[in-house]
Image 1: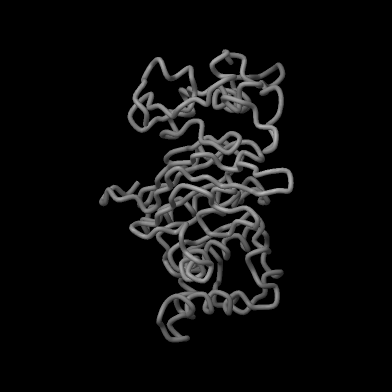
Image 2: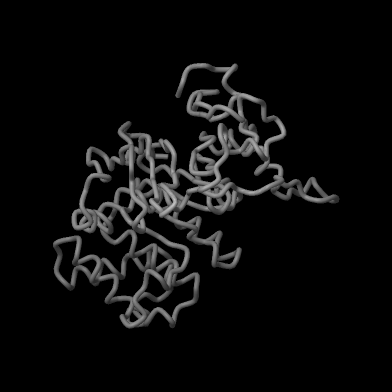
Length: 332
């Protein structure tokens, strides 16, 4: 990870996202706080509905109405994003923040050639000539591993395989050399061998260019192989965050421990896989206290009555669990 500067690329503090409905206001994200340094990959992991993608969409300014940021702050360097208009955010997306989504076909125009899409994006954000934009596009295609880019420059998206399309989307996200990339399930639709190639590509590009990345996934294996730090989300809140190796080897929160124990290993040759009983609560039926308490075998009366604070168990390792509070009472 690049540590030449101490200022984070992205800082999110106390982020709260609400969704008004006819039956009341639903709380989708609750007091989400984190930062990402230059060249660092922060992985967000959790079950479907935990709020991972919603966090990414909030940063990109792409929340679907009536969902909206109701509290907290989002800073890209010294620039506050959550107070900007949609017009102002459009100038930042693509130029300062790149995005890679799960389905590359959603990010590519099927009627435009790949070369056109790359050069158009470059010309939109960087003051260069068409010739220089084309050369930059070809260089990006080489950088993301597209073979014979000159021959494929005029090809359409449907003429590429799924893995190659995702590489083109990564090239699009990096066209303007953004400071931050939000990657939302970028490998889910790909074969395992292609997943490894794409993840290696993302990791290398972050290291080479000092780009910060928010990597959203439900796959703890992807996090372990790719990220520097991991944030575990449950019911709209970060319940544990810390260095990947530390969280994987010594998880503190019962939910994180459940996720770790559910991963198959070579040592486990027989017997059923461990599982977390129950399901993620709906937004309109979140339990009082710790949201995980109905599924937690260690839940106490305090867990059922009060939301646990976020505490630091070790430097850089924070947990929102009453089990951790006696060990360290100073809030992170």
